[in-house]
Length: 199
Image (cartoon, rainbow, N blue to C red; front, side):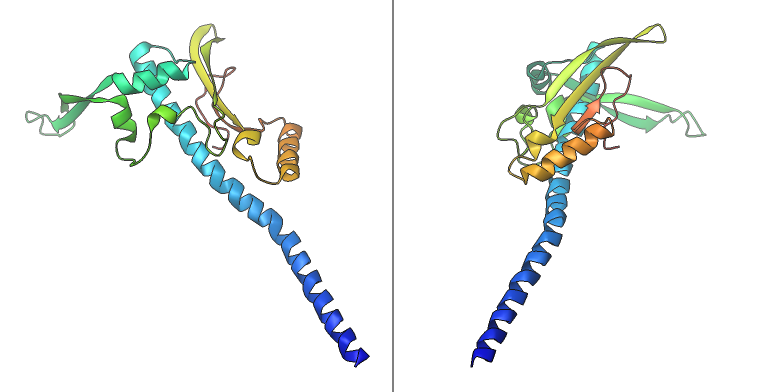
C-alpha cells in the first residue's frame, strides 16, 4: 500500500516538473509571439505617420513636429486625384496625359479603405494605455545643404506594457548594448532618412 502511494506521489511530482519545464521553455516563445504581434501594429502606425508626413512635406515644403498640425492637415487638406491616359498622338505609348478628375482629403486617401480606423488617434501608441508617439521635425545641414527631417519614436516600455517586465528590461538592455534605439522609430533627426529601424 505504501509502495502504491509512493508511486502516485512520484507520478504527480513528475507531471508537475514536466509542466514547469514546458512552461519555462514556452514563456520566451509566448513573449516573442506577443511582442511580434504588437510590433506589427506599431510599425503600421509608424508607416502611416511617415506617409502623412511625406504628403505634408509635399504641400508645405517641410515636415511638422506637431501631431495636432498633422491630424488637422489630414482632416482638411485635399490632394488631387489624377487620371493618366496614353497620349493618342503618340504611337509609342510612352507619353501620357495627366488629367485631374477631382480632389480627396488626405485622411481618405491614406485610410479610406481601412474600416474602423480613426486617423485622429494616430498619435496614440497602440497597447500603451494612452501614451503618445514622440514626434520631432526640423532642418539639418548635410553636405552644406539644408535638409528637412522628422523622427517618430515608440519605446518598448510603452507598447509592451503588461508583458513580463524583466524580459522587457532585458530586451531594452540588449538594444542599448548594441547602441540601438530601445523601441521602434521611423526617420532621423541626424540623417536625411525616413527609414524605420525595423527595415
